[in-house]
Length: 228
Length: 144
Image 1 (cartoon, rainbow over the protein chains, first blue to last red):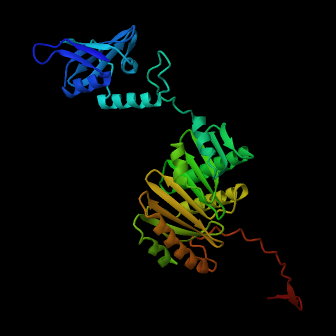
Image 2: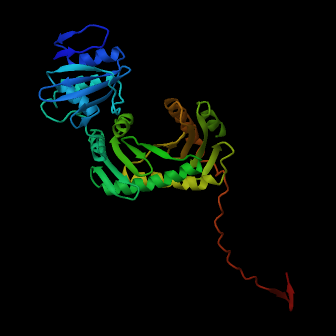
Image 3: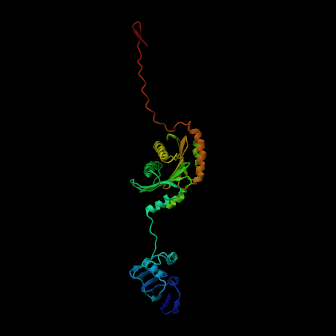
C-alpha cells in the first residue's frame, strides 16, 4: 500500500511504500491518536476514526463498524490520507484494536472470505441446539441418548427406542426433584448414574432434559463440556 | 451402625448421611436436626422407585449422584441397603467414595438384622375369630 500523509504542524511528511493498513492502525493506536484516516482502495474508499489510540468507527459506503474495518483490511492495495481534527459522528466499534487486528489476521490466514466481495466478518454461525446435541450424541461412548423438553417433546435422540428412555428419565427427574426438596436442595442440575457396565449422564434445566446412556468408559466432564 | 455414619463426616463437605433398608425404610441416620423424621418414608419410597425405573431401562444401578445448586446427594446401593449422603458442592469425591466403600462393607453386615428406626405403621391385625364360649352348667347352675 502506498501512503501519502498530510500531517499537522509537527512531525515528518513523506510517503511510505509497502506499508499495510494494519501497520497504519498499529501506528495510530500506539501513538494514542485522535483523528481520521481516509483510505482509498481500488475503486472505493472508506474512513477510519481513531480516538485516544483506539479505532472507534469505520465506514465504507453503506457499511459501518467492524464490517467496514474488515472490508478495508482486505484491500490489497491503496493509499491513505490523515485528516486531523476529524471526529466520528458515532462510535460503532467497541473492541480493542489488538483484538480487531488479530481477528483480521486470522481471517486473512484462513483466506476463506478473501474472494467473496462484500462479505467481511466471517463470524462462525452460532450452533443450533440440534448441532450441539448431535456433537455430544455422536461421541463414540454414547450408546443411547435423548433430549426432550419439559412439556414432553422429544427434540433429538440416538439409539433405539428413545421414547422409552424419555419416559424413564422424565419420571426419574420428577422423583429426584422431590428427593431434593426433602433435603432442602433445589434446582437439580445433573444426575450421574453409575452401574458396573453402563453409566448415564442426565443434564437438567427448567426447560429441558438431556440424557445419555454411555459405556462405563465415558468421560462425563467431556460430554458436559460438549453440551455447554 | 451410627458410628459408621459418623465416620463419613471425616470427609470435609459431608453434611449428613442415612441408611435405608432395601424397602426404603430408615434404619439409621446421622443428619442435622433440621431434617425431620417425616421426610424419610417419602424419600425412601422415591429412591426405591428411581432404582426400579432405571433397572427397567438401563441396568441394575449402583450409585446415583444428584447435583443440585449448592449441594450434592450421593446414594449408593447394595443388596441390603441404600446409603444416602448429603454434601456441599465442594467435596473430595474420590475420598468420599472410598469412605462409603468402607461404610457399605460394614453396613451390609448389620442392616439385615436391624429393625426399622422409625416405627412403621402396624398392619391392621386381622380380627381374631370369635370363639363362642360355651356355657357350662352343673345341676342347673351356670359355672365359670
